[in-house]
Length: 373
Ligand code: PMP
Image (cartoon, rainbow, N blue to C red; front, side, top):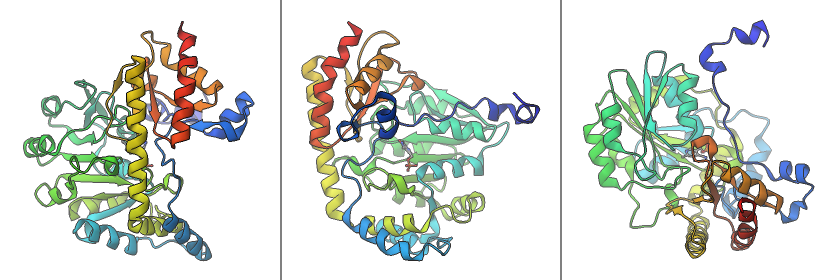
């Protein structure tokens, strides 16, 4: 290591970079596969791709690319505010909801403070925390989900942020609204609760709730939403937070001036109106999820019942099982996600795809599992 890089803070050098799902192009190059036959079920993307309304908005927005984007995202914020019945000043836009998570960390965390989150919670929480030189307090999961009583016990004087993904990635678990509300009532009001709802739109109607309405009662609540999943805009990077205006004001101080590009702003605005696309997405996901889970059951494979657009599947009982089956599937042209970095080396996470993609995965799976024999 050079003297230069050695002088970077220890907490930065200790960061283990985020491991993204493998792009199709990498797998095609490495294994010499036919790109048309490779199925990617590794990044919880929308298998339908981009909705028609977003596509049309993107085509229109291209003409204006010589200009900077609207730094305050006026039109998109207004639309989001109308959707939730809140003030535009309560909305913060992000370069993906990942940006929102980092802005929350940057605004509240520093040396000597900590964040609280669950074992098996989304990998960006420790990254965002460490990037600020703060400590992560990881609460053991109960039944693969957040133990909110454990969170309350872990919160101390130095806690500034709590991260809860609902549904959670990579486990797909879900906490019902009464559990969240009773937690919020007990969390000290000086602690920011980041409720990360990247997968909210995949919930069944009976599980849906609108936590943005709770911000009025809990000014320490920040709800994060993504356009990358159900809205199909993963490549554009756009998400948002709903919070009290004081929290939004702080996030606004630490964000880049133009953190959401003009194509993303236009596409997100149009996507919010594309109710048919959202409904179709929901239906494709429900059908795919039901098929995968019933097939796992029929094969005698353990899985965590999912509320998202992916399922966590146990593929073996040794700590090399996940990577071995991942590799075997990849050779058969199916890319899924190993989750050994989450401390789940015997498991794989599989995103729900189109019917033919799910079928290709289910056909490849028994063969791939033979590597463990
Ligand atoms: N939160 C959770 C729980 C996620 O799984 C993801 C994506 N993997 C994100 C946030 C970030 O998504 P994006 O930045 O694309 O909105």
